[in-house]
Length: 459
Image 1 (cartoon, rainbow, N blue to C red):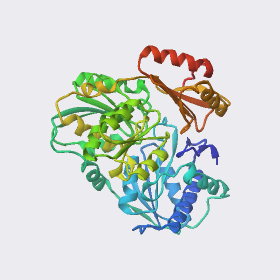
Image 2 (image 1 turned 135 degrees about the horizontal axis):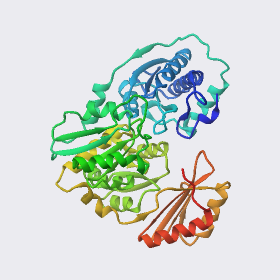
Image 3 (image 1 turned 30 degrees about the vertical axis):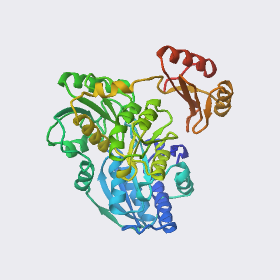
């Protein structure tokens, strides 16, 4: 088995080359050992403490990988509850709803069709990443010499769509003006879940794009790439829709465009939701990743909340959300997290909250976000750097006159601009984000930092 498939937050690789049924069996066996040992360590009175949920996305190889994964779990003595073809957030719901010791979703998220992988969660849908168990699972899996073993555990099939739909829609407010939205499912799991959850709702017209989920993608299921929003933007204009959203492959992330087909960056989406959540949860904490625009912090303070800046990555965001009992959190990648959703992210619940916000008044989306576009941002820019830690130290020295912190890489703040440079977890890359009060200052500072980092690389 190729150990490189184990990433910082999940397991992912090319099917048939890096990842196959034998690897899936070993990962299932190892995951069952790890999750069950965690239950023995601190049993929280779970209803199905010896059981593990398994779900999968629509990729053509997901069924065979899920089957092998389950067989490996059974051979390790674990009982499995197979919840079928689902979006990833339904896994977080299932773990809590069924009271199991954890779950695994077979998916490669936004990667192209040849890829697949596994997202692993523990009790109460806590993420299992490199620092919270994934390295242990890797050690166990790579040490297994064969894929033999009697299946001592049981398999139960469980359909949770009705209960999941009820959970998502409990956040929908009934008093809303009529809205028309375009949804690009990216030929992913949103194609299955959006019609089930949002179809037939009063005062809502849903226009679907790329709703077929056969495992083939019309465009890569990554909504953060602007080219992948082209069809969505055309449809919003054509149908004079109030807004549009594009989901990633496993439907845990989305991005939004306004009625004029302009992309709304995910940190601006976070800022848009701040007054809405703090009105419902006065004085609460809101968590955001450190790449986010300063407008997020400003909006949290303006609305009486407590801003909490956090490292990039869902494992860090979820832990901080739970530790601070924050009402919600937003990440530049399009993940949005909710206290009332087990401190987990959900594309479907995010869409519900957007409907509530847009439906509460008569102002269009563009008018709501216009006051939030107070700064000018570079977006994330990648640079190939061999000595990542050395360069980060050099940047801290070069800009030492600013306010510096090292929460994730280095962040330096000045009165009129700031930047963060952080290392990639898996590649010899440094990732740069700069924000400034004027476009001219932004260009000046990008040029200044490029003189140290070199020319950007496409990624």
